[in-house]
Amino acid sequence: MAKMFYSEARVIYADTDAMGVAYHGNYIKWFEIGRTEYLRQIGYPYFLLEKEGLWLPVTEVACKYRRPALYDDLLSIAAWVDDLGGASIVMGYEIRRGKGGELLATGKSWHGITDHSLKPIRLKKMMPKLHAAVVETLDGAEK
Image 1 (tube, one colour):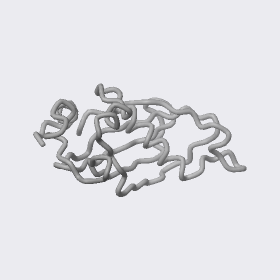
Image 2 (tube, rainbow, N blue to C red):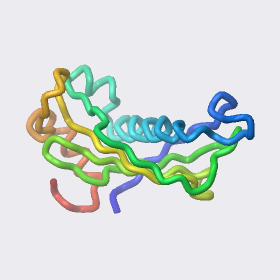
Image 3 (cartoon, rainbow, N blue to C red):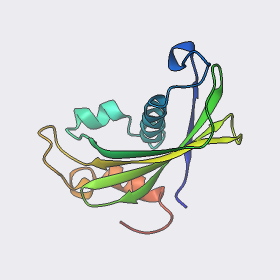
């Protein structure tokens, strides 16, 4: 499996319903936190990618809910690159209650790699250092 990168988020009151259970759409927001922190931790915060002319538009997202996140839970978000194509990337996620705690959700998001006009671009050609940094986090397969 690819190297996992971790971040945290707290379930705030506004994230929950009257029962104190996190609204299902928030898991997608927490996936984005994981993805953003993955990029930051490999040395490429998202704002830098945009400055360099690279976007990662979401083309698909999937989430499997296992247990509910509850008000005031501290969530551990794991993110990793599941697949890297020439002009696409797939991220994987796990959300747990606390570090190493109960598994709450798993998911994936699929992204195009584009310029600001949404034209697909080859990451290896446009940003070879970023491409190399991503490849280093994979499970050994050169992409």
